[in-house]
Length: 140
Image (tube, rainbow, N blue to C red; front, side, top):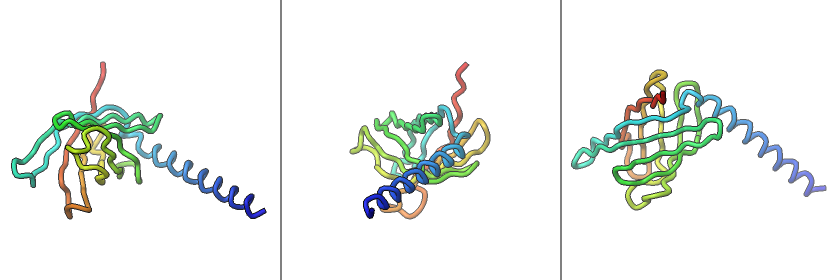
């Protein structure tokens, strides 16, 4: 009997978590598509700049990120979202020795064509460590 209750409780938690994630992803439909931009790190000694390529497939709930100038790449995991802002955690999969892993990412919708991205590394630095304004890629 106790095992049945534990299994039912676990299933309820899974269903609620899945429903919440789907609702969050619906809130990020504005981010769907491909985006290009330049990242800026003003506090770096040489004021680093680099290219950023972001692709979000909202239907499959996959966000990939590439920093070809380092080079490194990975994916973002959604933490929370509403109709104009989303918070993610970045997981670097390629080039871990070149890029910081598990940074906090805040994406803000400007309009249908532009978004801004703010990068945070709370374990290392108090404040924004890098930022970008990105433009939606329109495929003809």
